[in-house]
Image (cartoon, rainbow, N blue to C red; front, side, top):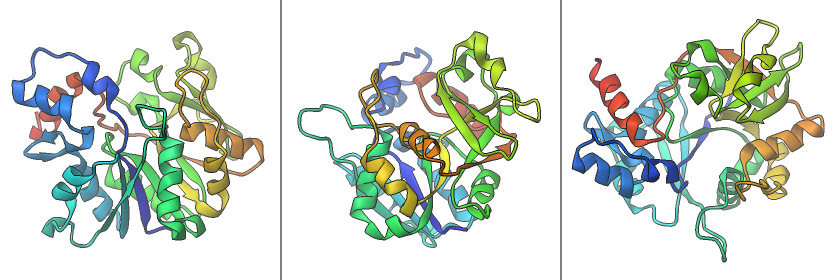
Length: 276
């Protein structure tokens, strides 16, 4: 059981900025083009607020939000808020290395966070995205697992996405003990059915993990650079751990995860939060 959770919010939001949706108001288009995704207002408050509320309900105590080099707007949005007073919210900064225009990926973000908060290297912690709304139930499952390292394994039949969208996620395979064997990013649509597990389900990662800092840190430090995206990505560090026979347990879960990736998602999420 852990009381720590790290939220990845330092990405460049490239897909959000590049996407087009003519049904959005000029105000929402401006927010989508200028703000980090977690700061886009939905239902009268930033999207990340809903995730923080679920994190609080799941009884986490310490929240580390990894942002880009300008965290001022995040601090204004989430510091000293009465509704979040029971959360110890701290901020880590993902600095962009010299010679790069964009951040160096999720593994680099987590590495920099652990360098800035060294006590995390000796503790367990959860890690999740800032642009997915994980439920209280999902957060509790991960927080309360007896394993020291785990990943939520989402049943694609419960995710309200098309198979084409699912194919852009990472499909996972497990052994009979539900130990993670592989994460396959962006599988070909025609091959997704090959990843059926012992329960006749296909499981995908929605980027929510539990890690042991004593095991993970060196794999973050030595994470390979993805040959196509030119970033140090968390699944790459995770796969190197598995190659070295370090166990990561899959936790099956069957529910939808609202996602904020492109401008089209803004309209869907406004409907979701209004109960339509």
